[in-house]
Image 1 (cartoon, one colour):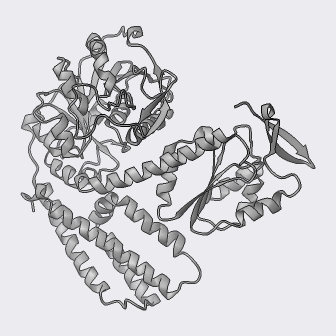
Image 2: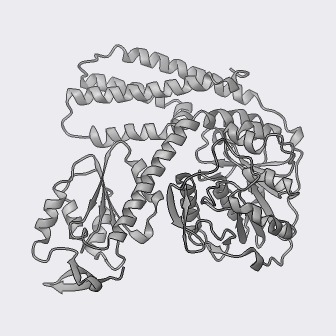
Image 3: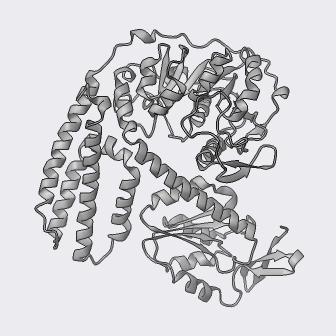
Length: 555
């Protein structure tokens, strides 16, 4: 749709006009005669303890009106790049932590996902600036779609944490018998400067690129994500590195069980322990910021941001190792004829033949269907690549019909020429002779048992509090009891790290709902109730860890 944003000045005031000549339509993006009255009436509807997503900023006067409103946070999204805020309004935004401003071109679903998680437990309101409702509907729809996808990603992430929170402690704990002595990936940092790598994922187009991989294996280092390993080995392609981070038993059963690969692996400390136990070749250790166990014992290894895809993790590694050129293969991030994986890749139950949940732009310029889980991977790629220096690392995608990754050029396999010859891989150490350090696991569990007893005692003390009337003194006692529990290192550094969504909701209640001048008895009752709810959640989680059958040899 063709439109322009025109500028109009009157009485030293700047006004913006949305102009759509084809429909003879002009919309003043702020009132000329009653700007403040109109906007103050609009922001007067704002309520405390709410997150507001405001579409449209007009000439910025609404920012002044926001100063008089009461709310937890207001995230302003401006659809039109031509709207320029003056210095006064930019300073207001800079000086007020509860107001944030972005242009549409600078946002993604990941940004909304971050804001929605940050303000979990608060009501989210989406409002359109009163002058923007009759402007470009496609721009407004684009923003609302991003918000919708961001909200969905938050829910998916919360469900993922709830589902895997046991694995994310138990598996890195089991791995400690090896990971306390595994070599760090730091020994390979920048070792491959100027070299080329192939990042092999298991998407549908992997099949059609097998011949390309074979052709280039002497010129480029082959990195295989775990799910692509069997497929490559079946075609007599032995990767230079295999990367793996997933803690689930499904990952082991589908992609690693019985696999005869003894080459180098690069792993996170929270990888499924069966994979670590089975592998007889060299392993290089990294950590993810979500892994709260490994980092207690290996402060020397580099920590990478937690990401929803091992392929995104692998691309981070390639940058860390110094590669200057990377080709993505099988990285479709979309459903090709309803398929999630390439033909011949061992799949989890019900992981193929999907119906699209949303559509994204493909490398061939068309729209392609994908899933919310793959969309999260796409957004993670976009965010990661946006911070890369494209002069030092260039990334190409060989998936013509796959989802378009921002900053990544599609190239045909036939057009790729890699003239350099890859250098040899690092000298391998003897993986088999590593000592097993079981004592560290036993000590961790003993510490967890001691902490469980402290919580037992604390919950007994809470039973003595009046359940109908909570005085200021009672509230202080409750807060002191909570402080005692959170002073336990294993609680703060391990347990609560895997209850982030639950903890964020409670934190927000204290920061935004209970934070007021006049506190009633009901408020104090609710505060104590939330404290008890948190302690009980921690207690339940600790019991689940101690009762996990995978740890029965150590308990």
